[in-house]
Image (cartoon, rainbow, N blue to C red; front, side):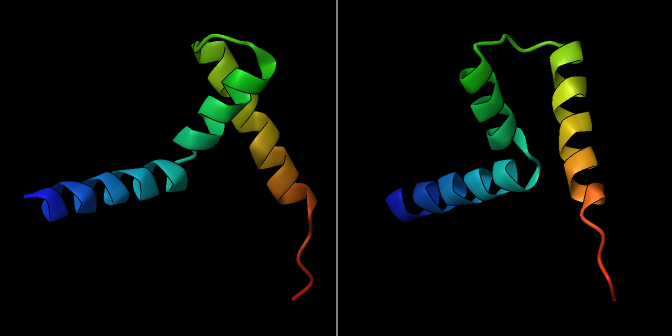
Length: 58
């Protein structure tokens, strides 16, 4: 049972990382902000802007 629980814990952590949930939690901690729809919007816009400002050549 312990191996299965550990597997799901790793899987959950991976999914949170892929969904930017961990990055959002780090953002909240770094800025001393509380979770809100406005803060999520600000975080998402900043990440998308940074991602698409770096143009890919080919």
